[in-house]
Structure formats: structure tokens, C-alpha cells
Length: 207
Image (cartoon, helix red, strand yellow):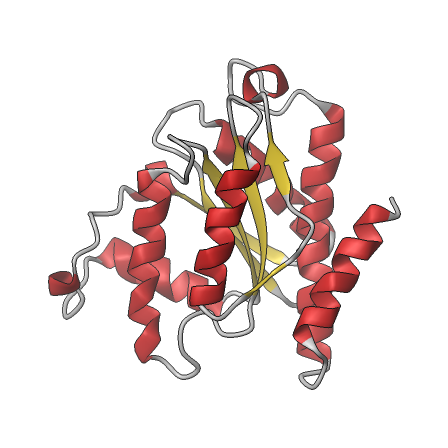
């Protein structure tokens, strides 16, 4: 066992959420690589809309969100594509993570994050690019290997479950890579973060 914790964050408010199903597979990959895992399903969390006025006394569900994310060694993020960007519920969760700015170290400092999107069309990478801006803002590191799932209706069953073997393998591999990189960084704090993330992408390209 790696002793690391990986937290999945995402999904949509749809009951049979494709982005949540994709996230669950990636989280399983992280668990198979030896990490302790937890999945924060946005539909189940039902977070209130972020407001700076609520930061002084946030609801319990918000405290759970920010504490769980802060304690993680690595994360997996997954969002559907709505109108060319992340969903409102996903962006709202990221907005709440602004509260981590007062901690030491601040935000998601040096955490490793794997990115997933689910799009009905062919432009799922737009969502990943949007999420990467948030990763940088929160002072974390995105693994360059990403899984933008395009043409989602053909990849997922009506239940929301992944039914494409190749996509399932990619998602599991992403979970494994987040664990591998996070473990490497935890073992050697002096390692160059960006080089290690780049190596993760190279390893995946060889598969």
C-alpha cells in the first residue's frame, strides 16, 4: 500500500452522471495502485452556491469538501462539458476551495491532480483546459496525461456506466499515474514537480 490518499471530485447533478461514472473508474485505478480513496460526488454533496459572505461560518458540507481535498495527496477531477466549459456545479466546488488560501501551505499546494471530462461532442479537451487553469490557481500540479471523453453517448450505457473498454483502461491508468507521481513527490520533496508530471505523460504514451 502506498499510504497516500486520492480524492475524486466531480460528477454532475444528473442521476446517471457520465462524468461521475468516469471518475469512479479512475478512482478505482488509484485504489488498485495502493491508495486510500474517497469520491466526492457533487450531486450527493449538494453544495450551496459559493459566497464570500459564508466563509466566516461555512455549512458542514463545505467544511467536509475543503478538509477532504486539503488532506489528499492527490486528486482526480471530472466534469461534463456544458456550453464549452465545466459545469456550474463543478465550478462552484472549485470556488469553495478558495477558502484554503488561509492555510499553510495555502490552497492545494503541490498536490497532483488528474483531469477528466465527458462531452457529448468532440471537444472535451476544452473542459480539461479550463480545469487546468484552476489547478494552477490552486497551486497544484496537473498530470499531463488527461482523459477527455468525447462522443460520450456512445461510451456510456444508459445507466451512466462506462461501456468502452479502451476508455475504461485510460481512466484506470490515469488513477494509477496520479498515485505514482504523488508517491514519488512524497518520497522525495526535492524532486522537480514539473519534470515528474512530464514523465507521467511519457510513461502513458508508451503503453
